[in-house]
Image (cartoon, rainbow, N blue to C red; front, side):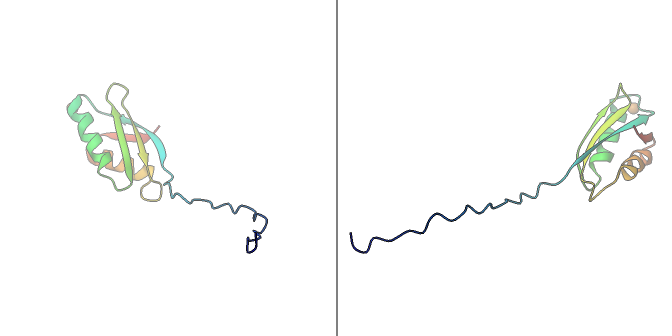
Length: 94
Ligand SMILES: [Cu+2]
């Protein structure tokens, strides 16, 4: 058939790297001293969750610990422990 296009051999596939800017979250475990009841637990959780860059914070009353998922570009573990200490509990990076 006249006019049929002569298609070029298929060009090598270009790999388009989809840059899903997934924030690189980090997790840190803190040791927290002084929590005695669920009120303490809630206070520490609120303090941690109130920090910019904190994605999630779970406080374990019985363990005296917390697990915090955070964006290292926004907040650092020393800032997290400082936030807990402002609530009146001793906190260290586990
Ligand atoms: Cu308490």
